[in-house]
Amino acid sequence: MCIRIQRSRATVKDLHSRLQHAYRRDDVRLVRRTTVLIDLLVHHVPVAVLCERWGLSPACLYTARSCPPGRSNAWWS
Image (cartoon, rainbow, N blue to C red; front, top):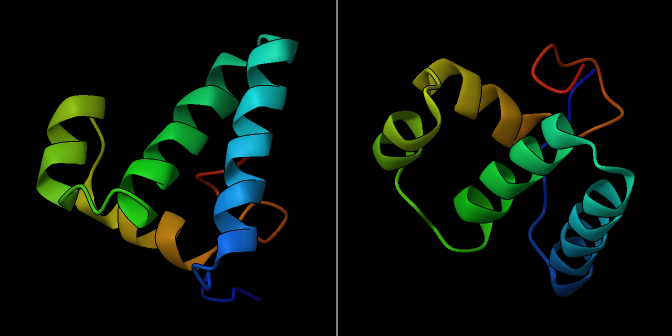
């Protein structure tokens, strides 16, 4: 089951915390994915720009936007 991410101060803080944790663990995949999510949800970078920048498909970003980590989502696994 997927849920939609509610962007709140707590969610943004948690995303930045997860990003720092991924950097400390040297988890390149998680750094990339968290950075994309922050750009998409917090900085409102257009999907087309993110697709070009990161080599992703729009469907991948729409899936990422609606299913957070810990849920059934191939983008996060």
